[in-house]
Image (cartoon, rainbow, N blue to C red; front, side):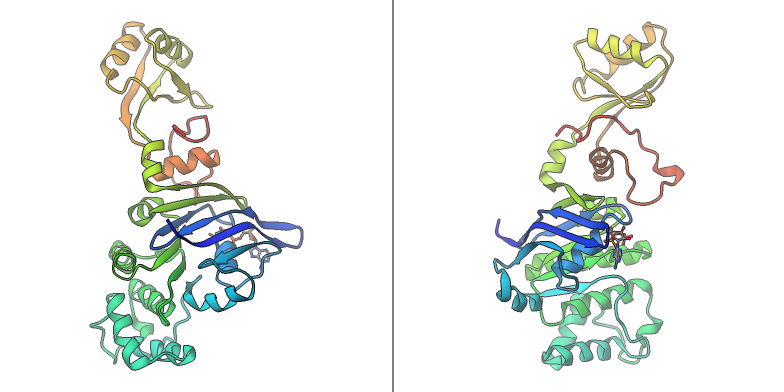
Length: 323
Ligand code: ATP
C-alpha cells in the first residue's frame, strides 16, 4: 500500500504544553483513516499540521512522497474541513462554491455542478441560501468546499458532529463514494466510534498527544475477537474454577467482570460449573469487541467523550484485547 502521508516524530508544543508528541502516522492511498481520541487528545492539532495550517515544533511529514519545499506545492492536493465549514450563509451552495473555485483558480462553471453532485446536493435550488440548510446539508457543503480543486487527500475534523441520523448517513455515503469512485484518501476524526467503524479502513488511536496504536480494520477484527463475559459473586473462586477447566479468565480491575477468551464453545460448561459451586451468577454471555471497546482497552479506559449511563463498558484489564 502506497503511503500518501507519513509523519516522523511530529510534535507540537504550545508553551509548556505538548499537544502532540512524536507521532509517526501513515495514511495509505485511497484509504479512509479514522483518527480516534478523546477531547484534547491532539487530533485537531495533527490535522492542522498536516494541512499546513500549523507548523510542527519538531519532527516532519511527507505528503505524496515529498518533503521540504516540494511538499509545499503538494498542500494544494489537501482539502480541509476543520471545525465548522467557512460558509457564507446569505449565499447559495452554488455561489459559495463559485467563490472557492475562483480563489483556487479553478473553472467554476465546470466544477460547481460536479462538486454538488458528489456530495449529494445536486438537486438543491440556487435560490436556497446556505444559512437555511440543515446541519447535514451544511456539512456536505463544507465537504464540497474542501473538495474544490480536486484534492487527493481530504482532512475532516469531526464532520458528523451534531448531525442527525439522516445527516450522518448522507456524510457516510459521500465519503465512501469519494473513496470508491475517485480514489480520494480521507482522514477523519470522530467521537462516534460506531459510525467511524462503518467507514474507516485504518485507524490511529491518539491519547494525550501520543499515537498509541495504528491498525487496519482487518487487524481490528483479528485482535478483537469474541470472548465470554462473566459477572458473578466471588470472582476469585470463578477464576479458580475456570483454571480447573483449563480456561484462562482475566478479571477487570474492580473484579466486576471476568473475560474468557478461550472456550467460546464451552459457555454451557462454564455456567454449570459456576452454578454447581453455589456461586451466584448474574450474567454470562458471548461478546464481540467493538472499536469502542478496543479503544478503551488501548487507552486504559478513557472515553472519547464524557461517559453517559449507556456508555458503561466492562473495562477489562490488560491493554490491547487479544493483541
Ligand atoms: P477536540 O476533540 O476537543 O477538538 P483534539 O483531540 O482535537 O480535541 P486538540 O484541539 O488538538 O485536541 O488539542 C490538544 C491539546 O492542545 C489540548 O490540550 C489543547 O488545549 C491544546 N491546544 C490546542 N491548540 C492550542 C493553542 N492554539 N494554544 C494552546 N494550546 C492549544
